[in-house]
Amino acid sequence: MKEINLNNALLFCQNGHNSINQVRKYTNEPYWVHPVEVMEIVRTVPNHTPAMLAAALFHDLVEDTPIKLEEIEELFGAEVSILVEMLTDVSMPEDGNRRQRKDKDLQHTAKASPEAKTIKLADLISNTKSIVEYDVDFAKVYLREKALLLEVLKEGDKTLYDIAYQLMQDSEMKLMRLTLQ
Image 1 (cartoon, helix red, strand yellow):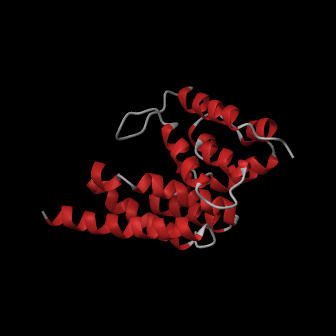
Image 2 (image 1 turned 120 degrees about the vertical axis):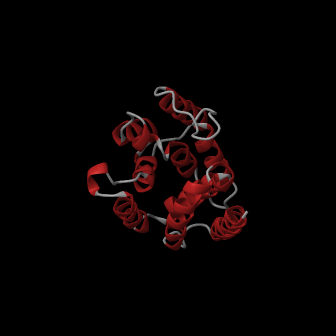
Image 3 (image 1 turned 120 degrees about the horizontal axis):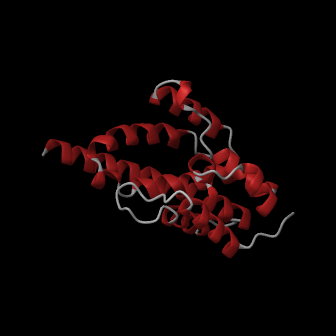
Protein backbone atom coordinates (compact mmCIF):
# COMPACT_ATOMS: atom_id res chain seq x y z
CA MET A 1 0.00 0.00 0.00
CA LYS A 2 1.32 3.41 -1.01
CA GLU A 3 1.98 5.94 1.74
CA ILE A 4 -0.08 9.08 1.20
CA ASN A 5 1.49 12.48 1.72
CA LEU A 6 -1.41 14.90 2.18
CA ASN A 7 0.76 17.92 1.35
CA ASN A 8 1.51 16.34 -2.02
CA ALA A 9 -2.18 15.45 -2.42
CA LEU A 10 -3.17 19.06 -1.73
CA LEU A 11 -0.67 20.34 -4.31
CA PHE A 12 -1.92 17.79 -6.83
CA CYS A 13 -5.51 18.92 -6.22
CA GLN A 14 -4.60 22.61 -6.51
CA ASN A 15 -2.54 22.09 -9.66
CA GLY A 16 -5.28 20.02 -11.28
CA HIS A 17 -8.01 22.59 -10.74
CA ASN A 18 -5.71 25.56 -11.39
CA SER A 19 -4.56 24.00 -14.70
CA ILE A 20 -7.96 24.86 -16.16
CA ASN A 21 -8.39 28.07 -14.15
CA GLN A 22 -11.40 26.54 -12.43
CA VAL A 23 -13.21 28.76 -9.92
CA ARG A 24 -16.29 28.28 -7.73
CA LYS A 25 -19.43 29.21 -9.63
CA TYR A 26 -20.87 31.79 -7.24
CA THR A 27 -17.86 33.09 -5.34
CA ASN A 28 -15.10 33.01 -7.98
CA GLU A 29 -12.69 31.69 -5.36
CA PRO A 30 -10.21 29.02 -6.53
CA TYR A 31 -12.14 25.79 -7.05
CA TRP A 32 -9.76 23.73 -4.91
CA VAL A 33 -11.13 25.52 -1.81
CA HIS A 34 -14.17 23.22 -2.11
CA PRO A 35 -12.25 19.90 -2.07
CA VAL A 36 -10.22 21.17 0.87
CA GLU A 37 -13.46 21.87 2.74
CA VAL A 38 -14.72 18.39 1.84
CA MET A 39 -11.47 16.89 3.16
CA GLU A 40 -11.77 18.85 6.41
CA ILE A 41 -15.33 17.59 6.89
CA VAL A 42 -14.14 14.01 6.30
CA ARG A 43 -11.33 14.60 8.81
CA THR A 44 -14.01 15.02 11.54
CA VAL A 45 -15.19 11.43 11.01
CA PRO A 46 -13.83 8.80 13.40
CA ASN A 47 -11.80 6.16 11.57
CA HIS A 48 -11.14 8.33 8.52
CA THR A 49 -8.08 7.23 6.60
CA PRO A 50 -5.40 9.07 4.63
CA ALA A 51 -6.89 7.48 1.48
CA MET A 52 -10.28 8.99 2.30
CA LEU A 53 -8.72 12.42 2.86
CA ALA A 54 -6.84 12.25 -0.45
CA ALA A 55 -9.96 11.03 -2.29
CA ALA A 56 -11.90 13.93 -0.80
CA LEU A 57 -9.32 16.28 -2.30
CA PHE A 58 -9.52 14.51 -5.65
CA HIS A 59 -13.27 13.86 -5.83
CA ASP A 60 -13.87 16.32 -8.72
CA LEU A 61 -10.55 16.01 -10.55
CA VAL A 62 -11.46 13.24 -13.00
CA GLU A 63 -14.78 14.76 -14.06
CA ASP A 64 -13.55 18.37 -14.18
CA THR A 65 -9.89 18.31 -15.26
CA PRO A 66 -7.65 16.37 -17.67
CA ILE A 67 -6.42 14.17 -14.78
CA LYS A 68 -7.16 10.47 -15.19
CA LEU A 69 -7.73 7.77 -12.59
CA GLU A 70 -4.55 6.03 -13.74
CA GLU A 71 -2.49 9.06 -12.78
CA ILE A 72 -4.09 9.17 -9.34
CA GLU A 73 -3.40 5.46 -8.87
CA GLU A 74 0.21 5.80 -9.96
CA LEU A 75 0.89 8.72 -7.63
CA PHE A 76 -1.34 7.93 -4.64
CA GLY A 77 -2.22 4.24 -4.86
CA ALA A 78 -5.10 1.96 -5.80
CA GLU A 79 -7.12 2.62 -2.63
CA VAL A 80 -7.35 6.34 -3.42
CA SER A 81 -8.03 5.70 -7.09
CA ILE A 82 -10.86 3.28 -6.30
CA LEU A 83 -12.50 5.79 -3.95
CA VAL A 84 -12.19 8.55 -6.56
CA GLU A 85 -13.75 6.27 -9.18
CA MET A 86 -16.72 5.68 -6.85
CA LEU A 87 -17.07 9.46 -6.37
CA THR A 88 -16.81 10.38 -10.03
CA ASP A 89 -19.99 10.92 -12.03
CA VAL A 90 -20.23 8.37 -14.82
CA SER A 91 -22.86 10.04 -16.99
CA MET A 92 -22.05 11.79 -20.23
CA PRO A 93 -24.03 14.45 -22.12
CA GLU A 94 -25.09 11.83 -24.65
CA ASP A 95 -26.76 9.81 -21.84
CA GLY A 96 -29.86 11.98 -22.07
CA ASN A 97 -31.36 14.91 -20.25
CA ARG A 98 -30.23 16.09 -16.80
CA ARG A 99 -32.66 13.81 -14.95
CA GLN A 100 -31.49 10.74 -16.90
CA ARG A 101 -27.83 11.63 -16.32
CA LYS A 102 -28.37 12.24 -12.60
CA ASP A 103 -30.21 8.92 -12.31
CA LYS A 104 -27.27 7.11 -13.89
CA ASP A 105 -24.87 8.87 -11.49
CA LEU A 106 -27.15 8.03 -8.56
CA GLN A 107 -27.12 4.32 -9.48
CA HIS A 108 -23.30 4.46 -9.59
CA THR A 109 -23.12 6.14 -6.17
CA ALA A 110 -25.54 3.61 -4.66
CA LYS A 111 -22.92 0.89 -5.30
CA ALA A 112 -20.11 2.85 -3.60
CA SER A 113 -18.38 1.79 -0.41
CA PRO A 114 -19.33 3.31 2.96
CA GLU A 115 -16.04 5.26 2.86
CA ALA A 116 -16.91 6.78 -0.53
CA LYS A 117 -20.43 7.53 0.68
CA THR A 118 -18.95 9.33 3.68
CA ILE A 119 -16.90 11.53 1.32
CA LYS A 120 -20.01 12.11 -0.83
CA LEU A 121 -21.89 13.22 2.29
CA ALA A 122 -19.11 15.72 3.04
CA ASP A 123 -19.35 16.95 -0.57
CA LEU A 124 -23.11 17.32 -0.26
CA ILE A 125 -22.69 19.30 2.98
CA SER A 126 -20.11 21.59 1.42
CA ASN A 127 -22.17 22.25 -1.70
CA THR A 128 -25.51 22.65 0.06
CA LYS A 129 -24.37 25.24 2.59
CA SER A 130 -24.94 28.20 0.32
CA ILE A 131 -26.88 27.07 -2.76
CA VAL A 132 -30.15 28.71 -1.65
CA GLU A 133 -28.31 31.94 -0.90
CA TYR A 134 -26.66 32.16 -4.31
CA ASP A 135 -29.14 30.65 -6.77
CA VAL A 136 -32.77 30.24 -5.72
CA ASP A 137 -33.90 28.90 -9.09
CA PHE A 138 -31.21 26.23 -9.35
CA ALA A 139 -31.62 25.43 -5.64
CA LYS A 140 -35.05 23.98 -6.42
CA VAL A 141 -33.53 21.47 -8.84
CA TYR A 142 -30.42 20.90 -6.72
CA LEU A 143 -32.32 20.13 -3.51
CA ARG A 144 -34.60 17.65 -5.31
CA GLU A 145 -31.56 15.85 -6.74
CA LYS A 146 -29.71 15.85 -3.45
CA ALA A 147 -32.71 14.48 -1.55
CA LEU A 148 -32.54 11.44 -3.86
CA LEU A 149 -28.78 11.25 -3.36
CA LEU A 150 -29.16 11.34 0.40
CA GLU A 151 -31.33 8.21 0.18
CA VAL A 152 -28.41 6.17 -1.20
CA LEU A 153 -25.83 7.57 1.25
CA LYS A 154 -27.22 5.97 4.41
CA GLU A 155 -24.22 3.64 4.71
CA GLY A 156 -21.90 6.62 5.04
CA ASP A 157 -20.92 8.11 8.39
CA LYS A 158 -24.05 8.50 10.56
CA THR A 159 -23.05 11.89 11.98
CA LEU A 160 -22.40 13.33 8.52
CA TYR A 161 -25.64 11.82 7.28
CA ASP A 162 -27.55 13.53 10.08
CA ILE A 163 -25.81 16.85 9.37
CA ALA A 164 -26.56 16.55 5.64
CA TYR A 165 -30.18 15.61 6.32
CA GLN A 166 -30.69 18.58 8.64
CA LEU A 167 -28.94 20.92 6.21
CA MET A 168 -31.24 19.76 3.42
CA GLN A 169 -34.29 20.32 5.63
CA ASP A 170 -33.08 23.80 6.61
CA SER A 171 -32.32 24.65 2.97
CA GLU A 172 -35.80 23.52 1.89
CA MET A 173 -37.36 25.77 4.55
CA LYS A 174 -35.16 28.70 3.57
CA LEU A 175 -36.03 28.19 -0.09
CA MET A 176 -39.74 28.05 0.75
CA ARG A 177 -39.50 31.33 2.68
CA LEU A 178 -37.61 33.00 -0.17
CA THR A 179 -40.06 31.88 -2.85
CA LEU A 180 -43.04 33.09 -0.80
CA GLN A 181 -41.62 36.62 -0.54
